Length: 290
Ligand SMILES: [Zn+2]
Image (cartoon, rainbow, N blue to C red):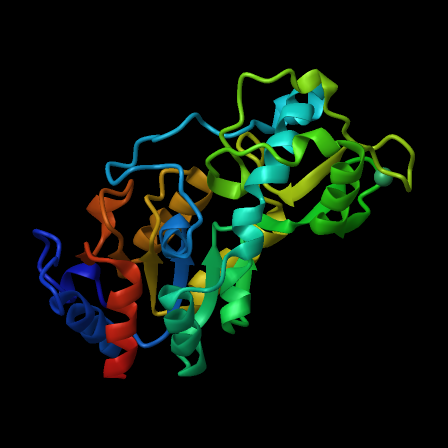
């Protein structure tokens, strides 16, 4: 069995222009079937902000917590009011070079599964088909009482109709459809419950911080990893355990891990190859070599 040490000497990350895509190309020649794990770094080039800086530290207030959202009406009022403004960034985003390059990589037969921590749906829109949305999809809303789903834009339209004075506010948009709207009396914002069961709490169909990824998705990801020659991490600091655990598992299984990310990650000591370069242009260069 190959160990990670067979591929590349450990050392300083590859950062020279062009050298990153060459190193990834060499990695792919040796390990042609990859499980790809992506994070916010593939979507920041599309105008969707992320939570962390290049050191992996929070660069804004941590996002809403699952328990607070479920137990507190005030939290939900603040969440949906901010969402009416911030979600526009996700609605208007289009796939970027990283999404298109990864879809091309899959079309060429190099991707067993593309596992994403993003909730923006941009991988699918770029043409990736073997996608596992680890943290769900922001464009859907689920009733936490009866489980029924609806489209988010539809709920937003209803919220806008009953909260007209909130529509013209401006605020910087944040990650996951959030916006930096603060200092307002959110108690006047009207939220909607599920119309099907009557009083179920409506929640974006995404895994909030403090909640767990559904078991079936985790199992599907472990199966895809077992089926792959190696793991490629793209645009993620892996600071959240839900993604980090797959790097740990790959390492335990002796599967080499390559990482393309600008900045520090939680798994830096596990990689056979670390490329610190812009993800979009580097992946474009990689695909152009194939
Ligand atoms: Zn319901």
